[in-house]
Length: 253
Image (cartoon, rainbow, N blue to C red; front, side, top):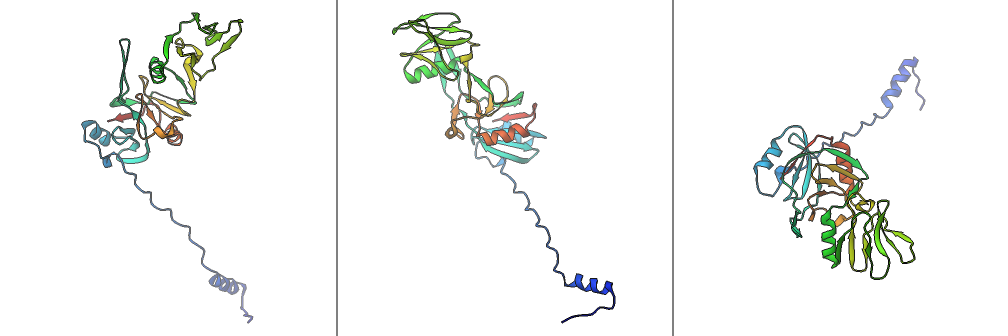
């Protein structure tokens, strides 16, 4: 049926009344509060209370829960599982290494993308013990004869083998210098002491060799598996890397 309107204004008014109501935009759901350190099942401690009551942005790590929280005041902004120190003490020729994550208050002293790991002495001691290898501490320029002929030495900061015919066979970075049943620990400062990929894609340095870093050993996250550092999955570590500034305090209890 055709309806007639006396004026254009009346026609527009009628069309407006007939039009369906505009859809209202959906309201975002309120954020779900994250469980923070107060939900920990671990034992209470003065350091835990201090971490809970501190002000400002900070990282809080529970070694008992193997969890890290990014906190702002009493609000947990982000939480992730971490691997913590395996609490093993290793001794070798009068030297002692304690693989426990130290408790206390630290700070983020630096951040790094695609970090290289510099293998400490304990790495070679532990690896040789696990594999049943002999261990030789190679000195720069030293020549160590091999039973099969030739010798192991360093050239240009690289460890390698000189074959009986005089050809040079350097050990690739990231590989161990193992010849026969002997592990040759590279000299400090040599290229073979630095290894790519071990620390994942990001590193937050807290000093004294204690890092928050990634790992290719994904199954270790959430377990007591490290030599004192805190390992995270790369996605969690990337979040912290982007949102935590140098100087941020870290409470480890």
